[in-house]
Image (cartoon, rainbow, N blue to C red; front, top):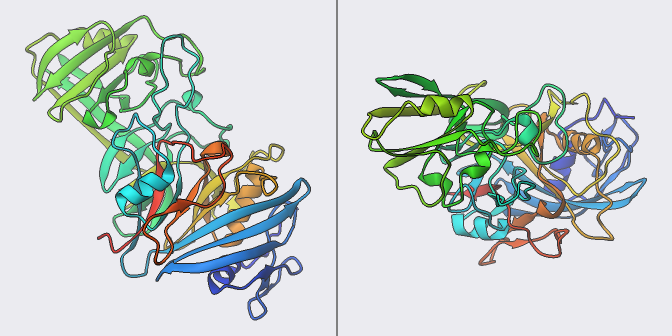
Amino acid sequence: MRSSHLVRPTLALLLAAGLSTLATPTGTAQAATGTATSASTTDSPITVISTEELAPGVTYGSFQVTTPRGVTVGYLLTADLRKNKVSLDLLHPDSIAQREVVSAMTNAQGAIAGVNGDFFNISETHAGVAPTGSASGPEIADGEELKFAVPNAQRFGPGLAPGTSTRDVFGVGVNGKARVDTLTLAGEVRSAKGTIPLGGLNQYALPVGGVGVFTSAWGTASRVRSTCGSDTSRNDPCSTHTYEVTVRDGVVTSVSPTPGAGAIPDDTQVLVGREGGADALDDLVVGDRVRVDEKLVSVGKPKLTFAVGGAPILRDGQPLAGLDTKTAAVRSAAGVSPDGTTVYLVALAGRAPASAGFTIAELADLMRAFGADAAVNLDGGGSTTVAVREPGQAAATARNNPSDGAERAVANGIGIFVGRH
C-alpha cells in the first residue's frame, strides 16, 4: 500500500543534511530526529548510508531499502537550480549514433556528476543492419535540438504507461526550471514541386510512410536502420521501398534508392523516405532547390534548453496508472520538485548483494518520497550508472558497481554542472 500523507521533501532534505536513518510510522515526519517514512510500495524504511555536498546546491549520497526480494542500495544526486550557477545539460558523445560511458562524458563536458539517460538502439534483429547506438527519445543539448523520437513500437525498454510516449522528456527551460514535458516535431521539405512534411530528425526509426532528415550531428552510422521495423513492431522487416536525397546549401546534389552511410558535412542535410515518403522524395532531382526546416516544440512553456527522453512514472505527485508492479530490476530515474527548482537523480546499485532492484511502481514511489512531483524512468540494468567527482578529485568515476561489471557505453546522460554559464 502506498503512503499518501508523506511530507514529500523530507527524505531529500534529510539526506542533504547528513542524517542517517529514515523510518517512522506512515504519514509522519520527524526532521528533528532525522526520520521519515518511505513511500515505497513495500512501506520499507529508507536508510541513508552516506551523504556529502559536492558543491553549493549539489549533494550526493547513498541509501538502502529492504524489499521482500532483499536489500537494494541506491544513490541520490540532488541539484538546487536556484543556487548560483548550478545547471543541468545533456551528456552525449560526439555524435548521436555513438555511445560512451557516463564517467567519460561527465569528464569530457566538465560536469560534477551525472547519470545515464534514455533507452537506446543497443541490439538489432534485422540481418545486416548494425545497431546505431542512438537514443529512442528526443535530445536537446545546450539549446541545440539534436534529434526527435522514434515511434512508440520501435522503442527499447519496458512498456510505457498509458498516455505516455517516446516523445516525453525530462528537461530544463530557458527559465532555469526543470520539468517533464512532451515534444513534437514541426518540419517540412519545401521545393517548387511541393511541400513534404517531416516525420523524423536524426532518429534510428522513421514512421511508416514518413520522411526524416539527418544532419552532421548524426555521425557516420548507416541510415538504413531508419527504414526498418514498423509503427506496430520493432522487429518487422526493413522497407524495400526507400529513397534518399542529399541537399547541400539548399540544392539537391545526389539521389539514391537506398539510404547510405558516412559523415554528413555541416552544410549538408540528408533526407530519407520510406513507402509514401520515398514516393514524395522521388520527385526531387539533382539541381532542385530545396529548403528543409525543422524544430522541436514542447507542450509546456518556456522553450527547453536541455531535454532527454524518459518514460513518465510520476505526475502531480502521484504514480501513473498502469506501472509495472512485478518486474524488479536495476533502474535509474530523474525527478523534479513541484516548483521545478530541485532535481533528483537516482541510480540503483548494479551488482549483488545490493541489487534486489525495484519495480517501476516502486521506483515512482521512491521518487515521490524524495520530494519529486514529476519523474521519469531512465534506462536501467547494465546501463544504470552514477558518476561523481568529489571535492579534490580530478575526475568523476562510476560509483554504483554497474551490472555488467564495468560501465556500459550508453547513448546519453544527465549532467550536473556548476559554474558553466
